[in-house]
Image (cartoon, rainbow, N blue to C red; front, top):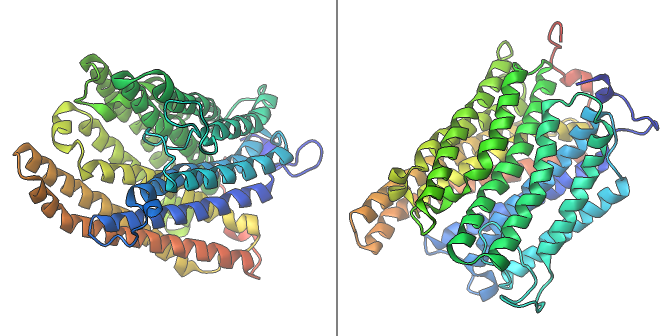
Length: 481
């Protein structure tokens, strides 16, 4: 990072708009709380205790609140807050406009409200992870709800322009690898969302549309969430440790592996389907390739930690980042096997897939956002964390909760998969799964409790009178760094 990362902009204003960072982090926390609450309630249906009988609170509709608020409410708000902090510091340039920033924030929260209300009223479209309402009646151009999809496109374009302006203005300087990821993620976001929410719904029917939907499902994670997640890791980990990343070469290999292999792997969500075998085989091959190459990123971060292992004890943010990195490696290792036809014949349509999704979305990317919040929130509020014990409770409830959920659902998926293979009666399979579903609900309760600890601690910290002093919270600078 060059000197501009620590200096004001040319007009004397602060590089970072901390108010927008705080607003997006607050909105992200509220969205995650609602998402996790919806997920916990949805899990009760599997146990016969779902509390709502009204149609608009049907379990299937509440599930959409759980998944979409996690993606568009929690992660998008959280990553946007992180971009407001990181990009100006890495480029030495302010974002395009603070007024546009206010518009983006207001627009995005309206989108979340409109999408959530649409889900509960049955206005969702039949695209996995793209259920956000188009606003049109199926097969017609007659409006029957707010066109949320169109608003998301407008919001995404504003976000892209907001952050591309400082990137463009700093184009004559050398870009740190985080900026590579952020730039690519912003460009891919527009392409991915339009592909997944227009082509399958309006242009391609049948298996062809399903193939594009698979690309959308996978690329939304791989070409937006993953670049943003790795970008923030490459920014915050060296910043907190106060030492350079171990290998710039490995960071470049990881980036180009993501760019080259990841876009082609989405069809692995629809293996053993009418999609042609050669397309499925291509998805399997590219998925295994990226899981192997992306291991270099994990190696890079653990080698960066060499000589600073004490940071796992002294820095809660580093603990979050590296717990997430371990779970990322586990997810990649698992994925390299589960995308093969042999594994898919057993685990397809089982709880194994649910456990895998929770480990990557919560155990990795959510953990990394928790690390960002843990490090950034006291600096935004200029107050020390109100409770150290709540920080510890949040960490351990989250780590244990998601680990229990992952292994529980993995075992449940294998049992159900082999029972299906042996042609057991469906109700026998359901009965065998019930004990595992109890464990899932309990572990989900652990995650929700940890989240409440974090949100209360954030509120108490913002109201605290104990002033934060930067010098008291910085690691020693590595000699020669």
